[in-house]
Structures are given as structure tokens and as C-alpha cells.
Image (cartoon, rainbow, N blue to C red; front, side):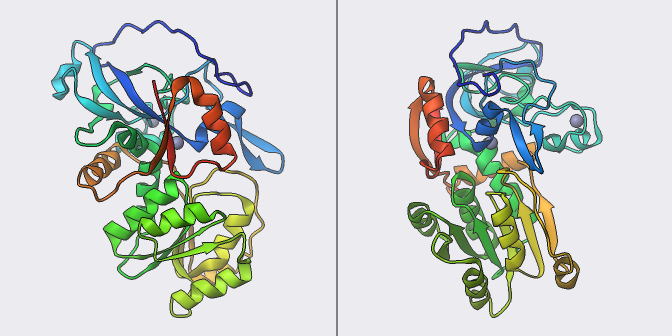
Length: 350
Ligand SMILES: [Zn+2]
Ligand SMILES: [Zn+2]
């Protein structure tokens, strides 16, 4: 890819493997909203400001794709020490950090303060037949999980898992999920099946809301039909007159975030995940008076991916993959995703 241009297919020579690196033959690569930002070139920070999606320092062209599941094809001379063997079924942890900063050393490479090497953003990713992973320790075994489902664990699943954790949910808390796409549907399952919280979902699409109900959502709201004032009073009615205990905003645009703040109850937690972009005017006294928190959450750690993969293997979380496409159809899939025509997750199969 190059910024602002449609993707095109290219042959790249497979690089020579370093001692710790591995080559993974891609079985499925998830198509993520971030890929749209990546291809368009930037995140919208509001007030006309932009943030480069590739970290600014990337050499383009680049192969996108950070949700990667595949078969271990080749191992560097030292990589076998990790216990992995050729032919193993794996999901790749793509949020690879510098390995030397405080966050990386604490196991949170997704929060790298140095120069990260995220696959599909700064290094070539999974919209390909093969992907080079710099160290076998970034692999998680995914046998027993359908490859298309395993792929989505690396971003949509992991992001939903980590964001749901940040909500610090207790039994019977009310969690409101804004946006029932790939991430929202994962959060509904994780929230419902691992925390005992009640889950309400807001979206503008009835098909997605229907899917949310099927996956365990207790209440759904179509915000194309219910205005903000109504939604606030409906949510309070569900929670004994209180606002929501937690809200996860998977959309992240001014309208959804200002709505989310209005929906918070005492000591409510708002976790921002969506990167649709823009700026916001906020009623300041609300936060101290409610003792509310606003947190950002960006993907998750390698150990969280390992935990989530276990949950998927046990069937606690079943990622919703709605469609598979050929690699050559990547541009078409990105277009559909951008225009809200995909519910759940789409994957590319080389
Ligand atoms: Zn993603
Ligand atoms: Zn780092």
C-alpha cells in the first residue's frame, strides 16, 4: 500500500530468516477498521490536525494486515527453542514493540514508548501469502480454532478483551457497548461470559443489533431511532435509576463520546477504543461530581492474547466472522467496511 491509493498486488522476495525469526504461511487475515486509516494515511485528531497511522517513520509501500493466523512454515536456527515446530497452527501477536522501553519490558509492547514495529503498520503484515515474524515468542498456538476466527483474536478480539478488562466490571454491573461491529460483538461475549455484567448495546443498524442479541446482549438500542435524551433515560431505567457502570465506545467520534459521557453513572468508567476521530467539548463538572473515569485502550498485551486464545479454544468467545474473501478482493472489502456493509468481521484468505 501507499497512503491514499488503492492496494495493489506485488511480489516481494521472502527475506532471509534471522536466528529467532519465523515465517508463517497466512491462512486468514482479518480486515480491520485501522486498515482504512492506514490506507487513507492518517487519523483525524480534530481541529484539522492529523496523526500518521504508520508512525511517520515507515518506509512505504507496505503490506497491511495485523490479524494473522497461519501455519508455521520455517523457523530460524534458534527459533525451535521456543517449542514451536514447522506445521504448527498459530495466531501472530502483531503489536511488536522496541523490546527495550519500560512498557515493552513490562510486557505491554502494544504501549511501546520507543519505536514499535507493529506488523501491518510499520512492518509488512498479513495481506500476503507469507509473513515474517521477528521472534517465535510472538506466536500463540491456535489449534482447535478455525483460522478465520483465530486471526480476528489478534486485534478485534484482543482489543475488546483488554477494553472490557479496563471496565473493571462487577457482577450485575451494567455495561453499555457502543457499536456492534467486529469489536463490539467480541466485547458482548467477553463481558457477558467472563464478568457476569448485564450488557446493553447501542448501534444504528438493526442487523448488527440482532446479532448482538444472539450473542447475549440483554438490551439493544437503535440510536438512529432513539435520541440521546431518550437513551439516557432508558439506560437509567435499566439500572435502577443510575447511569451505566461502564461504557465502551467502539466508534469514537464526537457524537458517540459525548453521548457516552452523558450515560455514565457514579464512578462510571468510559473506555474509548474507536478511532473514527475528531474533537470534543466536554461538560467538565460531570467528571469530578460523578467520580467518573475516561480511559483510552489500544489493543492488548501478548499475555492477554494468550488468555483470549484459551477462551476461544474453550468456546467461551466465538469470534463472528461473517465473510471470507480472496486476497485480490482486499480493496473491495475495505470499501464495504468503510461504508458499514460488514457486520462482524471479514477475512482475506490468500
Ligand atoms: Zn485492528
Ligand atoms: Zn518499546
